[in-house]
Length: 278
Ligand code: KIV
Image 1 (cartoon, rainbow, N blue to C red):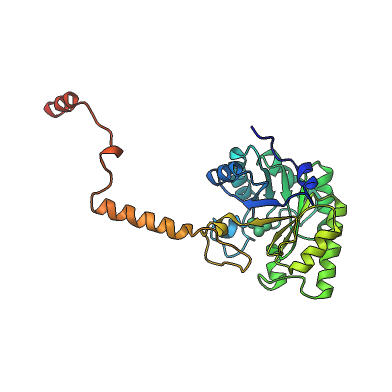
Image 2 (cartoon, helix red, strand yellow; image 1 turned 60 degrees about the horizontal axis):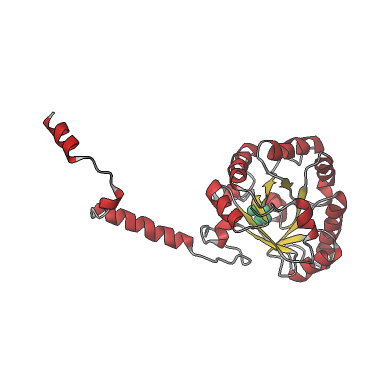
């Protein structure tokens, strides 16, 4: 069996090879990603939109996140599992943050947590790390602040905004984060940040120069088309494939072509005869 990926290894990988991260919210998907040796599996709060049908990520609860993190952890033997701290599970106080981060490891079986924000959440990040829990930061387009940002918009497009991103990245590095997700920021800004911090940057819509890349699994396989951002590459059109299969099933049921002999169980003729006679 291959040695499992670890947090120290993720940090040491910077500059040597690119890191891969994908979301998973259930056991079968996590089994597949783990088999492909994806470095990090994120149980993202994108669960709210992609699987639970909410319009944004704000509604998902700790209990829902834990439910899905447990399913993912049951499948994983190689990848580092990261639990995404949902909206209002860490913003209130460092104590609240530690308690909820701890639940991701203790109950969910994750190895680390991710949370959104820069300088304002440093006390929370420090407290979680002091409790022995690895933290991944998340800067740029932070969907939990959608109301403040005024929508799903590219961030860091002015010199002032980019400088703030750089300062936040440095603050997260200093606080002890093991990596930082950079979401929807110009490639040159992500490159500058990547070159100026010692921990890996994981980009999503942040260009090719980050230390790794992350995508939402349902985007990658073409299973979520309610909203497809420019940075998404759909490697498959699974929605179409599933639609074709479901329509075919319905047609074959109606035309009595399914099930066939090989899908059915038989019974000894003698037993059947006895049953009919009785
Ligand atoms: O929730 C999520 O899926 C994320 C990724 C987009 C990084 O935060």
